[in-house]
Image (cartoon, rainbow, N blue to C red):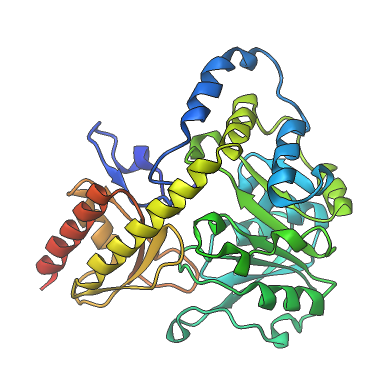
Length: 356
């Protein structure tokens, strides 16, 4: 069984009662209306095999990010691509900047690569700082960096990433930009436009978090065309189903949904941060995307205990104690609607009182 991720509501509560899921960082507005329409109108397409090359979708993504379709590869969620990349490139060792998404290290292990955990320091706010000594081991041939980072939310400037990539041409840098569309001024941090020009840069993005349909599983990567061919040779066929491809195309065409989501999330992000900042016993980090990373500063509780406590209020949070580099005093919550965010603030206020 796979463990250690947010969003598994069926496993959290199976008695049929409702629950507000703050454990998964999904668009609180749900998916674009056109997605439902397109899926309904094309439902009978499931009688046929999906487009094995995702040609129409690759073309749509290419227009969105300013690349050719030959520089894009679509996968069954970005996680499939994280496993595919080291399997195709075969690094001897890989560096993972921790704490971060657990599947980076697992993908390296499954490819037979050694894993070096570079743990960012709590006393430095978990900020990434480039040092050439990070890559002194000449067997390091790959590095994973999440931007903005999950779960801490820390951002790395585009100029820093590109400088690092250019300084180490023998190392493939995999940049996870799953939450970049939720960030204010993403052009300051994203390196997606440079991905095809640099042989050792791969940018991976999710389509299901921002567009609100994680159950369909779809993501993509952008890199040099030669790298795409190499990965295609190692990729299983038909991993992206027809309905997922159609949903992604419909979502990408909805420009109004993007602006509406960003305005909504920025407003609720600020509301939630201000509300949580007033609670003695917890300390939220300044948010950068559609989730907040929070430190428990009060005594007499842990993040696993708090998770269990909040389930009594019908609220699920992400206990972060299983992230490398974090202990049992950290948790993460998604930005949701005003009513739901208000309910979370109230539940945490009640929970903190019980610790004393």
